[in-house]
Image (cartoon, rainbow, N blue to C red):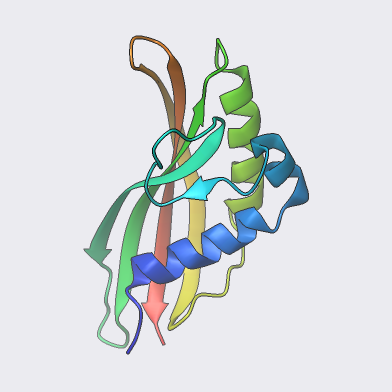
Length: 136
């Protein structure tokens, strides 16, 4: 059974991020989640929104994925979130990742958004990536 391209991509992205000692140190551990845990100690990284669109051609089955990775911080201001976000972009933008059951065609950072949550207590940086894959 072939993995969904989104699941295959997330597994490869998570492995790339968790393998980077500088990022893990900045997070205070490999705090990279698919769902925000209860009572997590910030900062942490969260795989947030994902959109999948058909990107098939007559010769191959492909997918375009729009992925959001969020950095959550408790520090006042956005400096911690931006510092961690820059590490993530450096690790993933145009990276050559190996995906289970899929071939990565392109992975690019498209932009970032900031926001405050819970009455300004949490700072959140959303990193948006556009990814294209083909099924093997």
